[in-house]
Length: 313
Image (tube, rainbow, N blue to C red):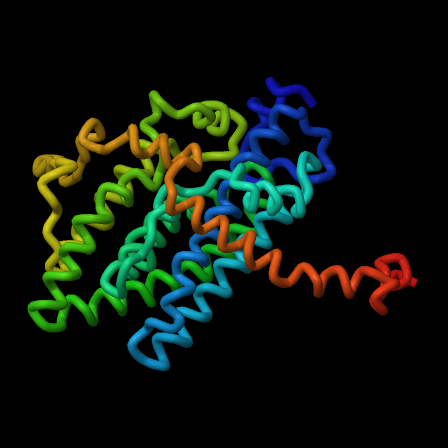
């Protein structure tokens, strides 16, 4: 099948591992799904410290479950990418560890305190759900199957994040002030979640043509704005002066001035040149190194382990 035929046929869940897909499609799908998988793993890393920092046992359990879900989502997505035959799961994880794997801008920044957690668990996860709901109709069938499970669990994550947001927003004056400060800090990053504007997107047009994506970055950003600006106001949050968000009353929709967003910082982050993102990756590298002796012991017959060939027997 050539790429022109792919573009003509592209539709929901149209292609699977049994199809003879052109390499151009396979590479584009691998890049997109690997990016998504990396983002799930890195999201788990920035949420993990709050298992201990959560203010109650119930919150600790809920954050712990959410972190486990994110890691599981990453594994599902690596398998969906692996089906394309371009990279193995191990290669993709090695790239992430080496700092070569790309992931979402929001997961390059640290979460400094509990007041910032709902910025990820409610607003960023809400943005993710807007995007992922459209991917149920992606043309790569294994990706769509993974998205079905991910969206089901992400719905619970958003409810959990909203519950944390509601609790803080109905707390003391100090709580509300700190929540507002966290919102002002994270709001521009959240609006950049969907990637660069359509005219600056490197891969967006091709992904749309072959059905990997079904909505453009700008359309997703606008859909998120119109769903989540009212939610922010519901909890007493005020939009910062910049980036400017204009409400068009006649048509009842919000629009962000995209030129107000710091795209220079965004592209620095996208190249994995932001220090915090690198620090998150290094944590994984250290964790891997710490348990390497266990892997060696299991795989090495000389150390009393069982070789993969023997295990198969």
